[in-house]
Image 1: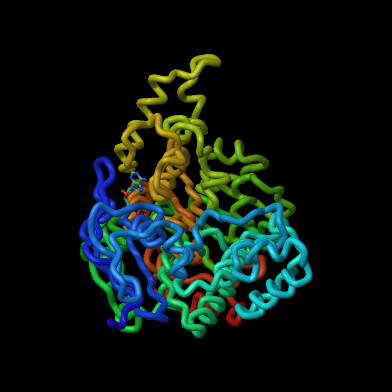
Image 2: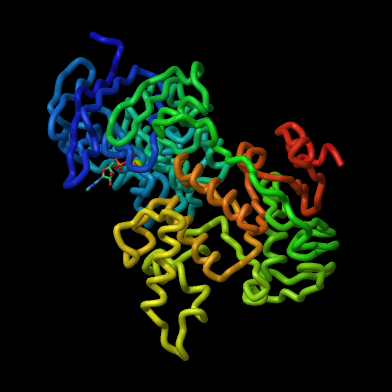
Length: 497
Ligand SMILES: Nc1ncnc2c1ncn2[C@@H]1O[C@H](COP(=O)(O)OP(=O)(O)O)[C@@H](O)[C@H]1O
Ligand SMILES: [Mg+2]
């Protein structure tokens, strides 16, 4: 028998118009954490579906513990001890934690728990103990946080004695603390001999948790590497299939004079914020989670009341009391949570692009739909938004393209000051690079840019200057020449000032 618990051999799966899997072979060693990375649409989820039996491949074989199969049925996969945690949860929200965990376990044979709730709760607690988490077994799952609901799913897999656990982008909806906890659970499961496939967009997680990492691109298997022998750059190169010589484009035009001056601004949990933004500059805002970056921008954008200090635009004090005041003054915000605040997912792309600049395309009270289409099409081309039609609803686009629509919407208002809050969160590497180019181009066209980012690499790579916040106040400022990770972290943790 080979060292592998699972081998995928020459798997092909075609959908109308796309080879989702193109002759993919990949092998998994018993007890390893094996990450799979690749851009959106690379074929990761399709490969997983072959393993869980959700789809039947067109050709190829699966070898599990030395036995060859042409494909699995979902039941076979389950009986072989394969479990999968999807991004969308599969819990029963109206049932308790204990019921959710134990429902499919072998201890529940013949519906034993129907008459023995106490035993069920005891068994559920044993399971949660084994993965090192505390969860009240009597609580309803609907009352739990997203992170805890995910843990319930993992616990259920454990109760079903999974030997092979697949996690397809499990961290996407989680907070940093919840991710930490999930990493701990994965380590425990690995110690217990469980083999794990871990799919994530976040490279830091891949490096934290995986033993080996496989790369997919355009439905093809590219390579498998020992995680400790590779680097972020190497993986990204494999993922996008080209060199990363210039992920952060250099500035080619000079920076101008002050556009926005903020003096001793207070309110919304921050105090005494003073800084200047120059024409054509990219000003980075760094700091730890909750340090007040978003809160500061809400003041400038009119989304929260100012209690002290002032804002000057082109040397003149201005009153910004609402977001429409801000738009009027040429300040636009591309928010962090674009799913909730950036655009309406079930509305069309053209609607989303033009909604904030609706005055421009209105004749009286009717909207000029021809003009709407022209504007939308203009941005589609300028920002290279990938979509077959502008009538598509926003939720049909990939994260990177959704982000471009939100940027278009702000640009259509003719804003000169653009505030990006975490511009590349949740989008994949190729789309990130495009976003960097876009931000750099906008700055060279004379737009002045504030960029809040928690990704150190991007703060350092793109900013002309960086302001660091700590507990609601500015703790430091670094020019391009002085920028490095160590200094930013010191200011961010309040150790320097
Ligand atoms: N049910 C389906 N019908 C048609 N095309 C699909 C279906 N599922 C996936 N695809 C296509 O297959 C390709 C791979 O998708 P997927 O496996 O979801 O990629 P990933 O998980 O790496 O983002 C994409 O081009 C996707 O649009
Ligand atoms: Mg996927």
